[in-house]
Every structure is written in C-alpha cells, then in structure tokens.
Length: 128
Image (cartoon, rainbow, N blue to C red):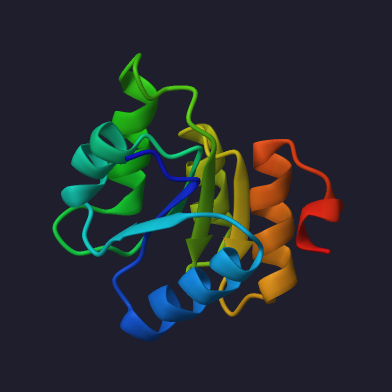
C-alpha cells in the first residue's frame, strides 16, 4: 500500500503528534519505531517522503539515511531529518549524507507540515 509520509520515530508521544498533524494536513501516514525497520517499510509502502529521527534504536537515522542514498531504488526519496540533536555538527552530517530538509525538536507543527509540503512539491492550498 502506497503512503504519502513514512515517519521513523521511537518516541510514542512525538510519533502520535506527528501522525495527527500530518494526517490533518491531508496525507496518509505510515510509521516505524526503529532504524532497522525503515528500509523494509520503504520497500513495502513506497512513501513519497520520509520523516526521519536521528536517535533511533537498533540503527541511527544517519545510518538509515546513508543506506537510503546508497540504494538506487530509494536514493531519490525526499528525507526530512527531525531530531532533538540540533548541533551544527549533526546538521552538517545530515546534509552531507543527503538530507533534503532538517527540523530540530522542539518543532512547530507548521514547520514540519511546510517542510513535508515543500518536499512533495505541493502548495499550501491543500491544508485549506
């Protein structure tokens, strides 16, 4: 089943909030809670965008992003890195590994929705 946005986030309250906000914006959502599950979920559900936390159990978001960009079947998948690790070094690593956008926790819901919308090439009219 194809979905619009796959969320890779291990914190239940953040996952619930992201799911609510992105579904309210009109997208179908899938979710995984550890780094090892991301690639299988991408192959299975073929999301249009990945919202990727950096601090995931089993495999970090950096490792997942590296794998996504190395696989020709997933290398063009837009990735929004969402993390509490807001240090410049983490942002630089994410950008070097091919992240398309970067949002730091705590985040404004509008920032996440606007970033996903931009990665999907959609206009703001969808949320009206």
